[in-house]
Amino acid sequence: MGDKGSLLRRIVLDVDAPSELEIIKLASELGRITGVDAVYIKVEETDVGVLGLKVIMEGSLDFNDVKKVIEVNGAVIRSIDEVSVGEYILKG
Image (tube, rainbow, N blue to C red):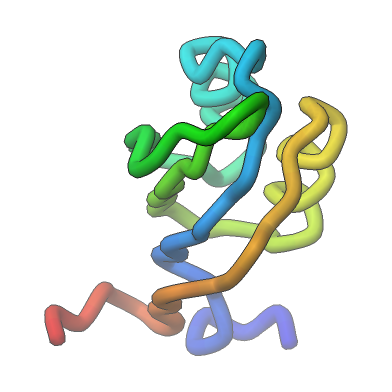
């Protein structure tokens, strides 16, 4: 760990969040994490009291930092749908 080949470059998350969560606030907080280059959040579904979000992040990411910000905002990661690790992002 710590070598350039092990950097988490891109992650796509399926996140459940309370419906009162402001996604602009969440995106801003995720964007302030050290190493984050870009954040994209899309509301994929809405249910009673819950938003289903797709969260895409790119940069030199620390998953623990990402998870912490999501959880502090009352949301939970339902699944990790995509991950890219290494010097650059492969298109699949």
